[in-house]
Image 1: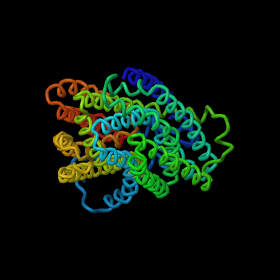
Image 2: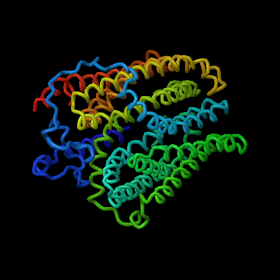
Image 3: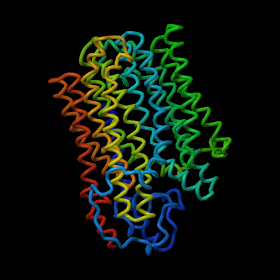
Image 4: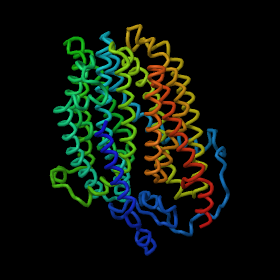
Length: 529
């Protein structure tokens, strides 16, 4: 936990340095086309957007043709204007973009869900708790350093749309090189120091440690191929191809589902068999991406084997710092939650129940997370092509979709409560998972607004504000977690999630109604400019 806090401080320093870089607005006014240099991909004319947003620009393909095209409309937009979905052109465009995004995001958690299902069939609560703890440690370590997709996709998209295939290759190959370095570091750490990594969620004498340790050491071998797959996914997404990643993910997950029962039960390898199946699936995914990227001429072997270029790596690192500051804050919270559930009882029942509730919670949240990514690129597109007033209406509609989907997902999860027994035959685990699952269902309504709202913040380039909002929310949750767990046990853990998402929702509303780029008072300022 201390290491994560140190990483957070380091990222905050890098992020602050990135925000202090000189603006390129003067060169833009002089006629230089924004986005031509990869190192300046975040620059936009200061006259078009507020000063903070000028640090994080849109791809050049989305830049305004001229300042004369700016809207003169000074009409303010009510938060409820165009809020509810109504089946119009805007809704159709949102649905068309969202469906492939949802499908791609839906595949990713299936590996964890499949492993959870088969490990649960072992009828051993400690095995399920240990596998869940290791999964959280691996996931947190992975996502803290896997910032590459967030910064690779827009760069590839810009170069590919401009027909600059060589430059697109450079970005992808440099991302693969950096991903290889980070992947090897992550693998080495988890292999050599598994107990240190697990200490963030398990005490030294935790009974579940006997299952968590071997699972994590084997799963560590998947660190490198997992990072390669995320780079491959971001590369194809940059070329607007979302079908290829879906096919790769589907095949790899199907292979994992076939291997799990064979290795866990037929060969009697238990949780270690689940880890081996996952590693094999990740290597299949990485090799598939590598092969298809080569066929698409998006990578060249000699570029991958060349020494990294500092000029190309710099924007990947500085852009990733802002993205990862938020990731560190989120994962500190999730690790604290996992540790709290692991220490509730020595039988592993509470931890096993939590793993079931969190898995269902995460699977339901996929739809909202996918819609969040749509907001992250649809909103800036509307700002440039149709003006900020229309972009504000688009934000309202996206928030409406978030509320509707969140409510539907919550209701659906409540209907699935009788089927908790699918994950485990243990009656005590089923009973312990009931209240957390109910709270998780209610929280999906809040998640619908939070996820889309935070996607809007990314689309407006307000990364630092987003990070600060999540850090404050994380601090509030850690305080709530300390007391709620003492008072209400596992139910208190999930009540602290309500505090976390409630504070995040407050940050979203503050951004949209007060200090965001599309808040009405700023909307008037930019449209009057």
